[in-house]
Image (cartoon, rainbow, N blue to C red; front, side, top):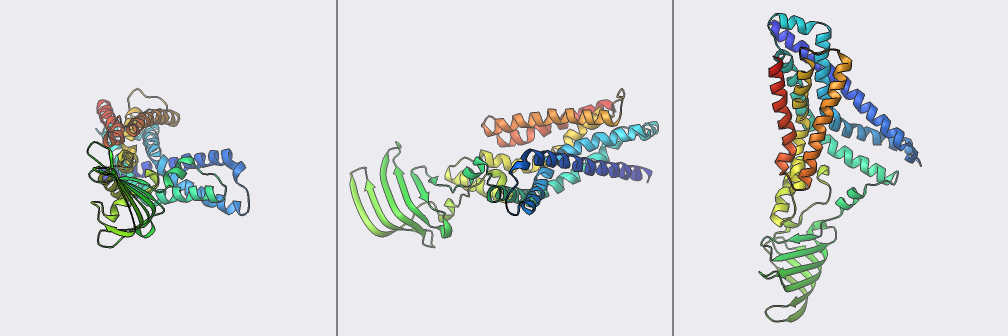
Length: 360
């Protein structure tokens, strides 16, 4: 019974420390961002637009900084217990560092689950809305965002012998100014089909309008038709590749795009990396908190809140430095998406568990 009350007490302190830490770091980030960009917020209705912009940015920054707030809360909680001599009392009755770590990690795990849902449901939309406000109201748009939103134009067929160049928005499954290249096994051009419009028939086929065909192998030939119904190995859903950065998709949509792009022979590593990071990033606070707890509960440690802040900042630099390196290697193709997303957390989980065991 007493152990249960003690765990709830530690968990309550950890939760309070997390909420305070998160509010502090998010508020500081938004204040610095506003001070840096205040000069561009002008024009009709700029006050309401800026308020909406920073409301959405607050959601995005919360998702980004919550793992750091977790490890800061762990360090502050452990330091507070030492400052009030509660940890000394716990040690005197035979309770070790794991009696502090268990409720703190439980709180971090619950926060990580909520954070994963929050990131998938809220942060994606908030980032899109913030980008839209910056573009429409303040005429500032990231070039990478603009480029990523362009519709996909080039597709490779299932067998690699057919390449499609589709223009237009793809509304209703129809495309404009279509070019279809058919290749031989030696990757030479066998046939080229150009059409003013391509639309699905509803039964898996396509209607090509104003068609011009050139054959190059085995004999050169040329023909023209007003319309033609064709059936490719690729069904209409194969061209449902959506434009946008991986961070702009919800996790379910990321999975659909990965499967679709794999079928079409398009790169999928960035989408797979983002799919894994939607879970690994919220959970990053748990192994980082273990390391922070081990540092805060070591026997020879001196100082309390100041020491906790310094240690938390140090752990943050190391962890997110390692995470940045893994992420860069993942985008460069040097690490698999799974390794790039989960390796930093795995390394810190082993280090944190070993450090706590050594403290015990």
